[in-house]
Image (spheres, rainbow, N blue to C red):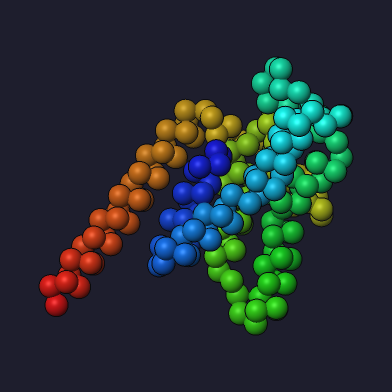
Amino acid sequence: MDILSHSLWGGIALGRKKKADFIYASIFSLLPDILAEGIMFSLIYLGVKNMPGTEHGHPNITEFPVYAQNLYNTTHSLIVFGAVFILVWIIRKKPYWLLLAWALHIIIDIPTHSFDLFPTPFLWPISDFKVDGIPWRNSIILIPNFILLVAFYSLWFFKRKRFAKKCTQL
């Protein structure tokens, strides 16, 4: 999925109560791509040696150095997410539900990434199993994604406006 959609899905799914929750959920939805792909593409831009170019479109994850592949695997693993979620729960002594936006990112990526570009290693490091999904750029995914985002946000704003109006009438 594209990075903007990840942010919007995280915000609407987990951050509807408060503005700060929306911001944190949106950020947690972005982190897997920012930490992995953002760093990889920054390295390409900076001209770091052994980084693949993008002359022929997007590079394949296997073209990147092993450390960059491992970073992508780590940030896109439900196993790693689960471990971090439990660790944060233990430290805080209560679950931090907004962190689930990270898991939502991974779940959305599983069917919307193909073997051609960053298939999602959601069971890493236990398994290398990946799904050959339909790329998010395909109109079969992209158009419904935008329609659903507009629908969910419209409903959310409508409900908030209606609730605020009721509160002022009391």
